[in-house]
Length: 440
Image: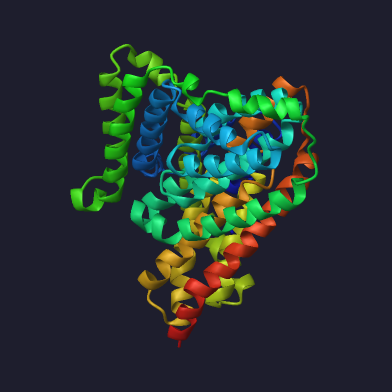
């Protein structure tokens, strides 16, 4: 590595370290790191700004605007209350139903919005049943992060990967959704075994659940119907966006604009408040910093390192991408996948030359490994995803219980290890074995 590579990597590592230690605001810190690489001439300004993936930025903003508008109707709280009513007040059933509901919602919404909408309902029900809410909230955030792995729009890493690797909404449905369903089912089995005797609820408290009225959560029924109509068109648009010759970002922004205009009670500044601007600008800074490291040769060096530890084999490379990305996002954040995409792009031609398999054949399987590692790995630490950070803050404020970094590891590490182990088997059976048969 040359001096530009070393300096750019040091700037990135120091910035991320300060962000993780909460000594530096993540958005401002990463923006500064990107600008610093330009100022010291490691990064070329025009190349750095071209590296900002506008498709990802506007897809993220469009979905945040859309979900923010829909959430004002009370629709998502209605779903949560309905699931709780079906549970008949049995705590483990509540946990399982809410985990299922959260996972499904997170596949089509952003994770932060999902946990912010469902968490108050969880705490209200737990208080009514006089049981601790913290286990339910932790399970909820795990379900949100796993569920978001299923689709292009479910998690920012998939938005980044989809745009960079030219993968469609349907590609994610066909390739990541099946394994996410398996992981969720396995998780529900574990929940039923671990928690079946953990909670004791008095009969009179349990009986109060039948008096819950899910309809009471609906704030505006007329606008809810409008929202669901537009949401249906947006989902259809995602499914056929290739045939429409239209990008997912355009569909998301169009849906948000139509819904905002239709809900004439809201002004744009009220709608704009629904966007998690910190995440948006963190991503912009990350694209800038990653561009600097890429221009300095850091990504090529890391790709060669991964190739060396993989033994040059397809199976070794796939597993290295999966587990390496899972470890990195746990220590940094799931959005740091923007720094991993160029590494995979550099690695694919090296493996192609080694194995004799065309680059285009290796392209998608390697990016599915990155998607699963980046999305699932975020569950390992308290900093892994924005949804986790938000939920831990909610627990600290409302439950007066601070979950430390190391305390969270007790829940996060087993969850991630199990998820990545199941993903490893899936990748090996579905992609690696067929590819190995093709290798010379």
